[in-house]
Amino acid sequence: MKSQIVVIAEHTGGVIQPVTYEVVSFAVELGKMIDRKTQVVIFGKSIRTSAQQIAEKTGLPVIGIENEYLDLYNGEVFKAAALKALETVDFGYICLPHTATGFDLAPRLAFFLHASCITSVEKVRAGNGDIRFVRPLFNGKLQAELAPATHRSVLTILPGAWPPVEIHPEAKGSVDIVTTPA
Image 1 (cartoon, one colour):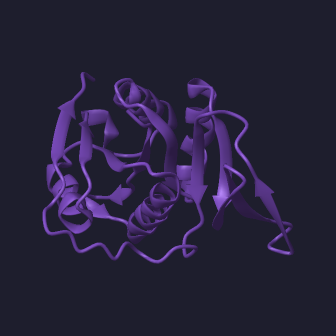
Image 2: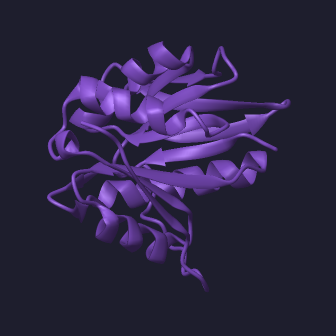
C-alpha cells in the first residue's frame, strides 16, 4: 500500500476555513504527481457536521478526532491528538495551512514523527524522480527549492498559493469519527 497525503483541516467554531480547501487542492495536485491518495483529518469538540461538509465538498475520506479539549487550539493537545490519529495511517506528507495554527503545529509534528518540515510552500515541482517544494525567502525576494531529507514530510501551504478545491465529486467521501479520552 502506498503512503497517503494527509490534510489537517482548520476550522473556527465549526466553520471550515477557506484555506483548508486550498490545502486540499494542493494535496490533490501533489497526489496526482506522485500517485498517492489524499485524506483529511479534522480535530474538534463536536465535528461530525464539519467532517461531513468536507467529505461532501471534496469526495475525500475524512477522519474526525473528537475530544472536549480540542475545542480551541492548544499546541500540545493538538499534537497529541494528531500523533494518535496518525498511528494507523501510512502517510508520506502531512499538509496544513500556513496560519498561526499550522506553523505552530507543523514543527511539533515533524519533530515527533521524525519527518522533514517545510513551511510556506507556494509551488511544487517534480523531476528526476523527486519532489521539490518552493518557498519564499527574504519577504519574497528570493525562492528556495527544497527536497525533503526524510521519507515523511510535514508541509505548511501558503494561503492563496493554490485555488480552493474545485472537486465536484459524484459521491461524498467517507466520514469516521473517533472520540478520544480527555
